[in-house]
Image (cartoon, rainbow, N blue to C red; front, side):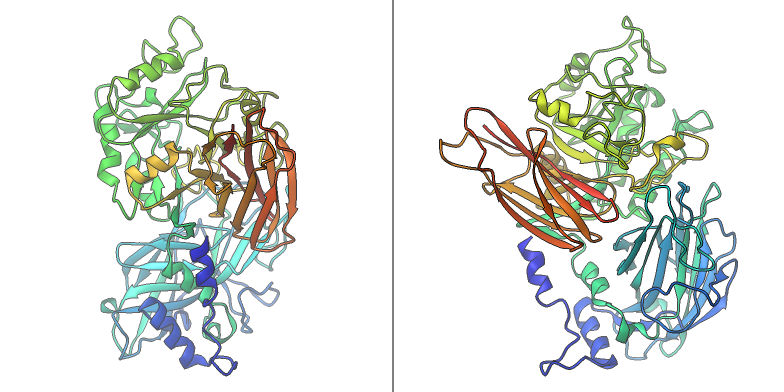
Length: 600
């Protein structure tokens, strides 16, 4: 992550050459030079509180402010909150960056349905945001919102925090400054703009967003953390970029209709829209169960990925789920158009446990080979007792990745709490696959069914037991550019890693080789050299190096957000193939797993 380090060296230009603090005008100038937008106080006074609630006198302050004025807008609010900005300067450039003071929270120690808030500027739709527990950049067609989570609060599992008179039982909340960048053409020089936040949700939810006056933030908040998000939307890792996606999701659409009989929520188009908008994903795949896809319209279904794909902005992989209840579930992903969908049930319809009807994994791979389109298959929730994966069926040419985490929890090892929550077998997890000598890269994704890719949480009345104390899962790739081919190739090469849902940056190398690499055995007397560079979204608790499915080294991070680790495996012996992967755990329990590197 050398490029990130170079940014860090100049990331706080709020001090002059003589060492004094920068004053208001100098801070405005530094931000304007960095992002090409004129900063303006984005919350001067309310216009219409709608159903937003004032915080009152007993609050737990967020960001840095002394005015006891905070307004909480629940996700289930029917009427939004609107407010005036400060006047827009007559000499503003092509864009204006409204400085905002924002907080997000779950609102309960129990799982809460996801949703979004649409933001409008002078009644023009700007973009959509969602609850996050980390810094996040959202981008719309013409606008962007960079939120710096400078304070994050997380309760212990099954516990809660009291953050204010309005927020007495909170599981997770994030607070900090934000920059809302909009075209100056939307505004009137010398006049105040009106910003409105409107809740958009289905089922009742306790989730909330909170806004407060922002006039003091120029002098007393770390605005540069938001500037950095605008400067570098995709962070660097050793000459490559890091992109985050969710490639395992389901809609509420069955065949061509949205109906209660579906296993998810929202139409396919709505799922794509959320993934690109409030979900803020770099890449995405809708992976409907094959029996929910009209067999006469599989080409049309797969072409949805083509229709929504925009290289450089939002990459979509064509894919589906091979829902095989007899041998295990696998997702199928294609590198290009022209793939095909195969039913796990040879007679069509819902999945079956009848051996006479159930197609085998070998039949799946053979059928996909016939398409002529490069593809890969990814097993998931392998140890779940409801539909386990038989690890004896493994094709290293196509089974390139293993979904180690999703809304089903962790599949790394049995007993991984609080990340692993659903009922599990004890010997069908990733570490068991390692012991078998199988070589998988690691990713995570949501397996979301609630219409909110990248932010899946408890579709009302379905599978509540699957939702827990971490995020819903993301896949991260190290790629030279954001194109479908580059993302697929990074996944196929296992140049990727998994996170529980937060955009943790992780770069793991063995003797300089990237994660996912297979190295030859080292000569006698030589030892593998592991290098780990990690930047957390919150304070890091520890980093563990796992060798051949056993913990070989633990490094305490003591709450630092950035951590580097160099470790030599002095116990290495060239006679036995050795694998190494890294698990990172933050103090808020959000985690990341690198793909392994194999030596020998």
